[in-house]
Image (cartoon, rainbow, N blue to C red; front, side, top):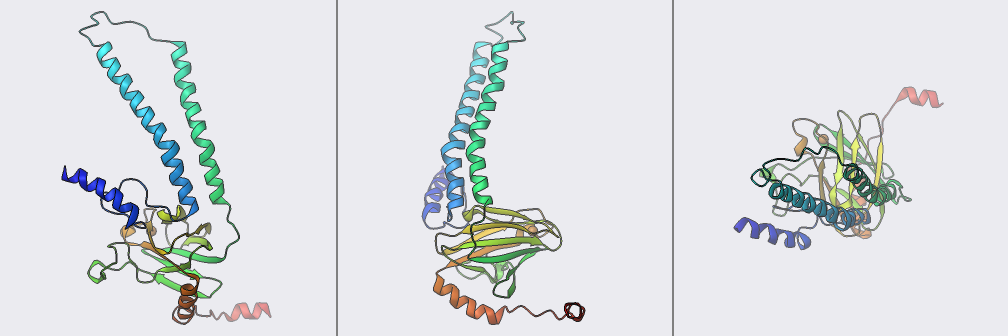
Length: 270
Ligand SMILES: [Cu+2]
């Protein structure tokens, strides 16, 4: 009983206080912080869930009905019927129709996410075994982002999610994310933004998000990538434009990308 109460209380708490990271006994999605995620949550809550519940209730009813109505004690001589054309057509057509009803809005959301609006900012996420590297190509920044070990956690840092160097982006701006990997497959996923893309060595995938609220949002590598797959979290800090500029001026010094000297390339370009 205590557990049930805890689940219910955590559902309500998750709506307010812990909006951007998973919470204990959480049911359902994390709270949306972008339009994409709001679309996904609405699609799930308003269309998929009612269909799933209706199907489950209907099947349960059929099973109970069959158990009672056709039980052995009431039917000493069982029926020998094997085919019924009407029923067979119905149980093929109705599921098809249900799938079409689900597919249309689902494709709509998928294509909306697939079209990247004009980006205000581009970042590049590179998966390594087992941490993420980030680049801000336009600002010439480059840094690595490692998970903070449990013993080094500060007061408000979540276990297995906090990192040493967070990605910092301004609120309300379209952020394009280029995603790749340097060794094996990883995946860059941030539930609150409705973003998840595979990080494939030798290939660049892209996605985007527009964060609507200031805060720190956590995600995790979502493609089994080896022994420390669970220990390469993703943390994105969404800040106001002023704070972002402030961070940029510090980051330009701290994370400046080294110029790569390549004599051969220089000779060719001459
Ligand atoms: Cu990984």
